[in-house]
Length: 310
Image (cartoon, rainbow, N blue to C red):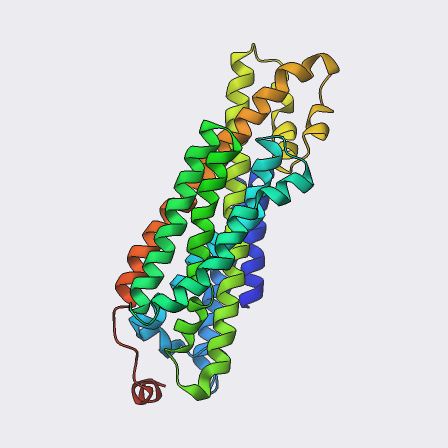
């Protein structure tokens, strides 16, 4: 039921840009996903030995730890998928150069777990989780500014901040989830942690991808309209191919005489859409820092309290 719920939700988000958000199929998929998720909860409540102990969700610290994992995966880890698209589509890097261009993110993500391990003896987990998500949010907001300003150096510095936040969170997220459950339920907690991580990545790709595609198409349509309205009927096809990283295929939809006009407009539209994506991801991470930092300041639930509630 849980997997089917994710399938319907992500299917609805991805297809909504193609068939329209007002299409009945979009509503059916999204509502179906919500209903299947509710059915999953109902089934789990009926089991004597549930796969997910829903009683754990009575404890604010456990909820905060799960939300920390969700925010980390959805606002930081997923950026390793999206950021190279800007290097290719926005700055015109080759695929290999885009991989090398991600080194600032990778290096700080590699270094900062060592720093986090030293800070763990001095600061509470809530403080470190909030600090990590704050760095992720700040890095995404700086990246949104950098893509609008142009050039690789500002972008490299911005993604280094995001990588630092991801490195500070990496490892601590699962450790904090595991600390909230008795030892005999460690397997269930580990499974919930991994499920939360991959669910966040999948949903973030669906949501951010839909946001990027729709805003890029909107900006490109406005730009083409300002140019006299030519090639408006090709806007969706061009935008979808540009977002996918295939500028050559996008230009292949147009006569060769239009390439010099449409290509800069398509790149500009992509940059605008990508900036919005980063802005939303940054604000969500900062909101996550506030919520997670608040919830995780609650005490770890005592094992006997969990057993009694079960």
